[in-house]
Length: 255
Image (cartoon, rainbow, N blue to C red; front, top):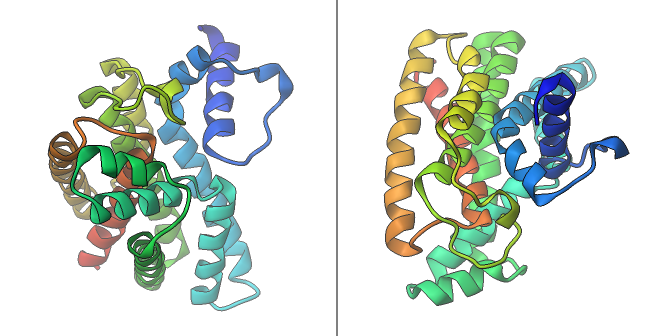
């Protein structure tokens, strides 16, 4: 699918799949189209991060920065339909609640949330909130916006990088339409969507964040190979959440 209209169609396909944003009917849908749109996942992160940053800034004129940031996190969850948070909870429930591969996959497929998943969600949101409050206090709203956009984009780059390194372990599932090996050009395009946001407000934090993500990716891939022999849709969401948290903590460490 080539041309500007074709690329726009792919971006809107990714936007419609990974968020709750309504997309025009002319975009259409097919598994092949969604698979081709995978490389736009980090650009969807740029969109989500920018919109959440803008709304958080607007809310800060009404409420205190900590409260505005908490409300901004709520907007982020609503905007994505808790798509990635669901993957985090399901993955932690399954990987923490079983040892046998088939049992892990069975628990992961269960829509109910368990203790491990509930605790993981609570911790993830609490850490995000405190980290973003600290980042805003240290770097102002401009730095906050850039870090938020960068984290949303780069964490999604890490998630799609699993599509190049691992195989999908289910015969069917919610990630099946995107469960093809991602080509190197697609991965590089995804990474390029997040790189411009890594150099500010502190280039040292950006470089350190890139190193942290590469180390986290290597460890996570090794862990998934050992436990599952590949990835599921839930583990992609888990990867995105881990990467986002790691980037916020890295910026805070340089504050």
